[in-house]
Each structure stands twice: as C-alpha cells, then as structure tokens.
Length: 624
Image 1 (spheres, rainbow, N blue to C red):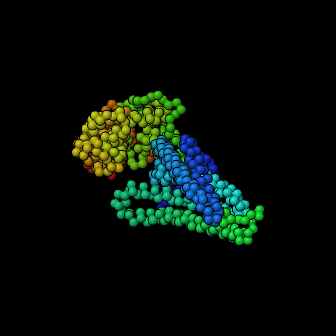
Image 2 (image 1 turned 45 degrees about the vertical axis):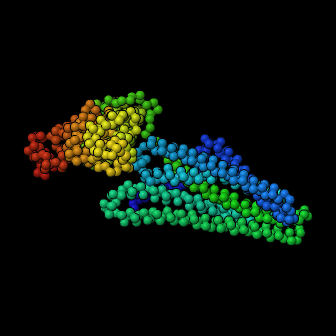
Image 3 (image 1 turned 180 degrees about the horizontal axis):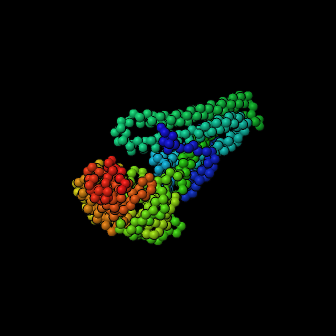
C-alpha cells in the first residue's frame, strides 16, 4: 500500500491533553435531560444504600436469631429482609429504564448533529476522509458514548456512594476489623492505576483499527465489480487480512490487560477476606476485642460480606473508567468532525437575489485542490444569459472544476466568479444552487421510489410535473413497464436499472427542477445512439432560453453549442463556435481530428474550412 493510501485510511492517536476538555464537553450533552438524570441518580443512591444494609441484616440474623436459637420475631425479620430486596429491585429497574432513555436521547442528538454537519461540509472534506471512517463516527463511536451515559456516569457515582456506605458500616461494626480489611486497598489502587494507563492506549488502538476496517470495507464493497473484473479478489483478501489482523491484535492486547487486572483484583479481595477471618477468628477464639466486649460471629460474617461488596464497586469503578476512556477516544473523533470548519458558507450579509438570469463571469480564476498544484490558471470568460457553452479538453484540463466552482462546491484561491454580476460568495448558498440542475455521467440514485428520485424531496414538484418531465425525456417508456410505475422502489444507487435508464431519470430530474442554468457533465456518454437520439430533442428544448454548460469528450454532442471553450492544462486556450475553431486549426481542431478525423472530416473539407493544407501527419496544421 502506498504511503498516501496508508495516510488516507489511518487515524491519529489522541493525546491525553484532550481528556478533561473532551470529558467536560461530552457531559454537556446531558444538560437537556438533567431532571431524568437527577431522578436516576437518586434511585441509584437508594439502591446502593439498600445494598449496604444487606450484610447488617445477616449480622442480626446470626447474632439475634440463629446463634441464640430464637424463633420469636423471625417471620417479621424475614419479611423485612424480603422487602429490602424488593425495593432494591424496583429502584434498580426504574434507574436502568431512565438511564437507557437518556442514553438513547443523547445518541439521537449526537447522530442528528453529526449528520447535519456532514450535509454542510465542503466537498473537499469528503475528498480527504474515507466514507468508512465517517460512518464509524455515526455508528460505533456514538454507541460507545451510549454505554457511558447508560452505565458509566450515574452508576459510577452510585459505586462511590456504595464504597462510602460500606466503609462507614464496617467502622461502625468494628473499627479494628475494618482497618485490617482495608490494609489491602492500596494494592488495589496500584493495580487499578496500572490497568488504567495501559487500557486507555489499547482502546485508542482498537478504535483506530475499527475505523480503518470500515474505510476499507466501504471502498471494496462499493468497488466489488471492479475488483472482480480485474481478478483482484486475492489481493484484496491479503490487504483485508492485514488490516483485520491489526484490529484483532489491538483487541487481544486490551484483553491481555483485562486478563491480568481482574484476577489480580480477585486475589487482593481474597487476601482481604483472609485477613478478616484470621483476625476476627483469633479475637473470637481468645475472647479479646476492642472495648472488652466479645466479637460475635455475626459481625465477622457481616465484615466478610462488606469486604466482598467493597471490592465490587472498586472493580466497577475500574470498569467505568474503561468505559470513560473508550467514550473519550470516540467522542474526541466525533468532536473533531463536529469542529471541522465549514469553509464554504454564506456571507455575513448575503445578496437577496433569488433567481438568476444565467449570466456567468470568470475573472482571473486560479484554483488548486492541493496547495499550489493549480488545476485552473488565470481563467477568464463570460457567458451570456441563455447562451449554450461547451467545455472541452483532455482529461484533467479543468472542465468539471469550472462547474464545481460555479456552484461553490469549492472556492477559488484567486480571482472571482460572478453570477448576474454578483460574486457567487455573496449569494446565499441555497439560492445559488437552486438555480442549477446537473446531469452527470455517473448518475446517483437514492433508494426509494422513482418519483421521489425525480423530485428529490421538493414537494413543490407535483406528480403531474414528475410525469411530464419523464415523458419529455422518454423515461416514461420504461417506467410505465415497471411494477408500480413511478412508485417502483429502487435499490441502492438504482440497482436493477441500466446505465441509460438511470441517466434518463437524471434528465427528468433536471427538467422537473426547471433551473436557470443547466450543467451537462458527460451526460450522454453512457447512452446508446438510439436513446441519445430520443432525448436529444428534449435536451435541446430545455437548453432553450436557459444558460447551459456542457462538459463533453465526445465532440459530436457539443457542435450545436453557441460557443466552445477549449481548456488545456488548466488554461483557457481557445474559444469560439465549432466552425471557427476548426478554421483556427488549433487544439480543438486536433481533438476533432483525433476523434473523427478518419470518419467525419476529409482533408479537402478541412482545407475548405481552414483555407490551407493539412500537414502530412494529419494532426499538426501546416504553417501558411
């Protein structure tokens, strides 16, 4: 894999300096749901308080009923113990419901915010970031945040309250035994600190590798046809195995830390219980205790239970910390997307102009996709309202870039582009783009009905107008044959339709929107000759009294245009009508010769047009 491709799929590891800032911003999403969170917190506290009473009930059962073999009041005590667990169950149930509702609401807000951001980001962002990585932001990263809100924040606070309650009860029952049981706590904190540092790095690696897998899968699933046509399946498998192997190893590394930490916590907890049994048992057997009173069996049993319960929330807090770390890693990447600067946006005081007359002006325009690799160099031209202009030139000469800049999919670095005398940067983006309809070579159709694909959610376009537009380009001839007609549900990207049928739908879409400016970018290159003849009249009709920009390699499709602009290496070299450019015997003449020299134009015809002979090689004009 090349370094460029590697960089495209890789993501950077985040730095620790982002933790506090990211965490603070992350919890800001809970503000709208603070009431539900407050109720959930109260329920969590009540639940943990009830849990902390369980060992004390055990102590009472042993010392007051079992040891003295007392039966009076045992049923009342049993019902009280049952009631304790019943209320614990109810409070825990309500807490889980509230927390999950809050988590889902926050995820909904985040996904909506991310999608809205993606809709307004400039196209250059998508040029630099693979789709799979962006999808990871919306799916697995947001899911990681859900776990934080549902089982991280509130339950973490509950665990801290539980630890405080357990320690308080332990010292209340017997302070010496409590100190003995807490001797091992420093060991637990050392183990937790070791795990925290290493697990954080592991989570970052896992998240990065997952994004890389998603990017690779999206790319190769979308390009499955190309992979199969060129017998590249095995090579793709090898690359995926490498990426998948990296992801597996990252997960195994994280599992390794878990496999050490949790058994270590269990060992430390067992050591604490052993100390309680030794110290408590010794005091009971020798009859020595603090204050001269004998230590009871019930107190020792309760202390053992408290010790076990104490280590559980400590383990939980470690796990909650891991959830927090995973959420920080995920949220950092989400916030990077949300903080991405929108460079193409409305001016502070945009023009109030809505409908364009179609006048276009490029004035000394320079543009580069990457740094100073200029795609357009000092390009200047004017297009009159209602004029049809063709853009021709070799691949990479800048033809499509011209139309992209006109619609502000990108912004120029130097120069200015004006529509009706107003700089396109002063137009409202929505108003500017509403004046355009674009028919591309690679037609994009969405899943859904054919009718919705023609109107694209614009309710102002009625069913009658949809049918009219389809009939004008003869798309109705195949649509009527489909089950459901205009209600026929298309698969993803129009799967099941031929390339020509997709382009006919795209033409119908352009007609239905009735634009001021029509852009045809290789629009008929994938349509057979018969279909092209069927739609040519409709194309000519929608070009009437409407500014049209036609990008084409097939010069036969643009000879009727009022003017032809010839681009070469980002520069506008020639402009004029078809016949005028043929007579000039320059770049356009060479392009025409390369495509149709042997079929459509003879040496004598060229002489008649140009007034001079053709050079022997038939390509380079002879100097007169």
